[in-house]
Length: 308
Image (cartoon, rainbow, N blue to C red; front, side, top):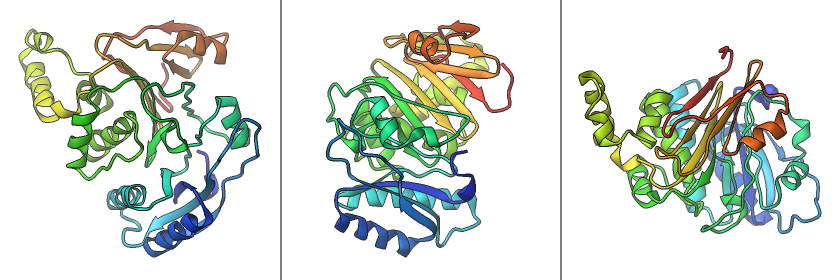
């Protein structure tokens, strides 16, 4: 992972508009967490990146839930929601253990240089190279989107954002980043971490089979997929999309069920590559051994230590 010296603490990457906002955030964190270490996120001024916020990182554990994994995770989610919705000028954009998200407004190579990404090592990376089309371009709204150890990048448009957001708000998630992709990160946390669905079933929530496809399935499969549609109908992602979801030990690629956005996958040795464009895979790994195009709604799932 990214932070082996603090692997047991939650690594909060935060952005603040001013020193005053940072002091207010720091006071809040000290009230609710035990802080093992905190420091500025190492960064370098880069030509072309303007108006960068204060970027800081904290390694911490919730006061009341230390040692209780699920309760501690829920506590972290609660505080991230509180900070991002209630504190003016400060927000948490990464909150996982032994992982980190680096993002901002600029070209990918500029962001990588700004955050000195070459200084870090990891076995799983997600990256994004798009500018926003119908949402504001700002530091908090850049990709990836994260919560706990989830990292989500997205190509396309989630036209069901409104109903997805309302469903998530009933479960305590608050969407504040002013972009549709945010709902995917929170939906992944809800259905896979809190409700225990497998990635395959989560894919059936986000890009579920059409009703006429369900009707011709075997009886047991019909009951399962009908139950998923009835329970999680408000989390169905409508519109053209390709999403890549990373978390500890696992990466998931998924496209919309009628393939309005492309999804490509490739393998070189024991390394999995997933992208919205095949050319990106060839750029990263010119000697990729095998590539394929998944069907719409068919997830590509890679797990650490699992041979292809």
